[in-house]
Amino acid sequence: MSDLQAIADVYEQMDLRLRSLRETEDRTGEDPAPAPVDREQRINDQAYFVLAWGQLEADIEEACREAIREGQSHEDWRHRRAWSLYNPEDRRLSGLSFENRLTLVIDKGSDDWKRTMELYNVRNQVAHGALLSARIDMERVIRDFFRIQSSLARD
Image (cartoon, rainbow, N blue to C red; front, side):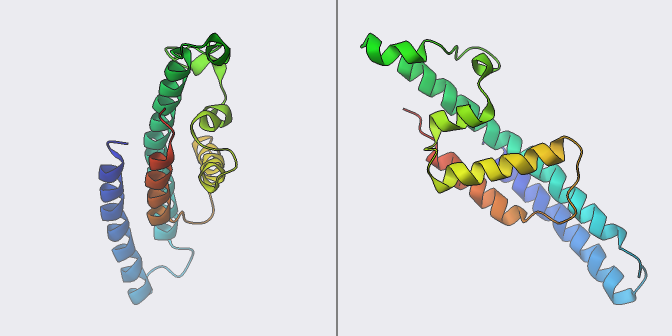
């Protein structure tokens, strides 16, 4: 997630600008109808969410590839045999769903796994064109992304 902090920093700058516009609207009462800035803030949240998600997903992909390579290099065939079903060089990781890729690198019973799947569902909704009606708490999301990234099993 080499660019996640940069994405978070730019998001913060944009959010501050939009918040300032919102405060100006509120103070002047210029737009008593549903404020366009509200919508812009929601769109900004969602755009940066998807951009930041890409950083986490890339790390999950790489950790998954490392786990497969590690499993395939085990000296005991009984351990290695299941890993031989996967090709870590395959762009789509041999057709593994996101849920299965995640399960290879985070314990399925963990809070991080559950939170990642919650965020994946948000990602799918936004990325496939269904904009959310509420704002996304990007500060929390960025913290979650860093925590999830640090919990990825890489051995």
